[in-house]
Image (cartoon, rainbow, N blue to C red):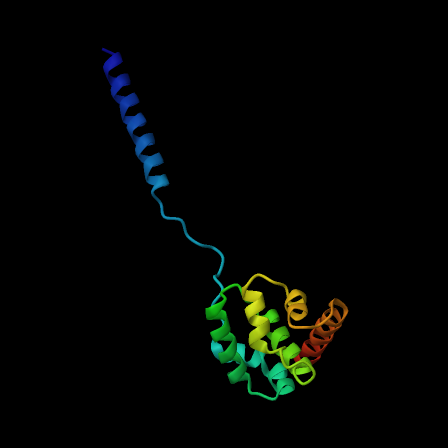
Length: 143
């Protein structure tokens, strides 16, 4: 006779533990970290402010051009976009083949900026020097 109450108690406890474990697994996870929010276009335009002044355009126009280029090449970074524009600005008068679009096309095709510039007629040394100068110009424009 002592076995029946013990058995009932054991089954009750086993069921309770099982239900508790199951309920614990079904508890939804909550996020404890805040999620970052996408940058608004106005904030991106401000990021192009100094570069746009150096290039003789507006931040909004540069932002719009970047968004268009990014649609054509989703892997395009802001840095490469700025470099392409700066290189075209710096070299376009001497080497008309060096345009922003030509550089962006080279990047989209998997080439580096240096390889693209060489394909547009610059020597390896001239391409390297031009790329360094464009980076310096862009850095000065953004500070």
